[in-house]
Length: 478
Image (cartoon, rainbow, N blue to C red; front, side, top):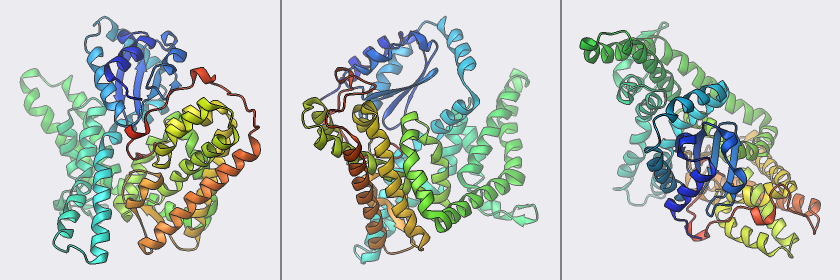
């Protein structure tokens, strides 16, 4: 089914109470993220029935509308275009309601996602190039091209702190280029000549965590200066103080502290997998679907980025990807078990290719969540797949991903670890098969043949996109 972005945006805003009721509009890889001034004015049932809407997550003033990759960017542009013409009188109401309903935790998670989600496309592209370059290097093919691929894949990661600083300042109300300027010191080679706490700093020490903290501090300092420096001196003093004060704090405190935290994250991940790998995998794989459903999974991006910068790959992403395998297995069981339900089987056929490639929202909101029980059995499949991979980590074989990229089958080009690529891929494939199998069997054994639609009536179940319009799965979307 093809979605017209303009008509979808109009319908979405209509069911949300009009443009004046929307405080902000952003998007991640699959979801339109909106903040509403008056959530009670929104019609969630009508919104779910809009063609092209795969699901809706309501969290107070924060609403997430699942549209799928590709479509979401076009719809977001249309929504923003309509918001720009909103009445100025609504601005104060929107801001007041946002402050009143935004809890510290929700605000923090939303803003962390706002910093890192825009970086994901580059992380995916560079990660795949790194994987291709590694295969060519190991096979001895095209030796003249390998250095070029390595340079293309590594350049962005080498300067990731600068982009994090830019987005952090933009997200927290500062001047983006000043946030980037302060964060750039984290990766500047000249910091090797600076001594803090009795040790010389190393370029990149603290990584994305240091850059995030440095740029956040820069926004606080800049906003402090803006209200106190005379207008005639503002253009000179404010940028200077904004770079100087946070820059010195970063060099003589934040880099060391963030480096210590980053090292602790890496050590904790290694300990977790080598000591309690099967249990850790079971918990991570089993609990990730609820995080995706609530839209909280993006908060893990800084941890993934820290592990990639520190170790070359994140060992958490393959474990979390098993949740998508359990979801696929559960959907297949529903398809086989409920032969009489033609509309449900059509919905599964259209959503399954995306699920295999790691985009799980169509299956979550169109199949497992409306039925209820299959959502829990999908979590069981994810737990089993995670335990499978975690068990091998306890035996000394780590499975990681070189970038925060696709899950499901689409994660294979990004796989890495401390063993051969063949061994790493085989273990990951074994985890997928385990997740598929347990998700299927758990659903088959617990779902009655005449299971009714729970939560969302069949006629209100969100329509599924044309499988041909779904690209490969995207990070954290399962």
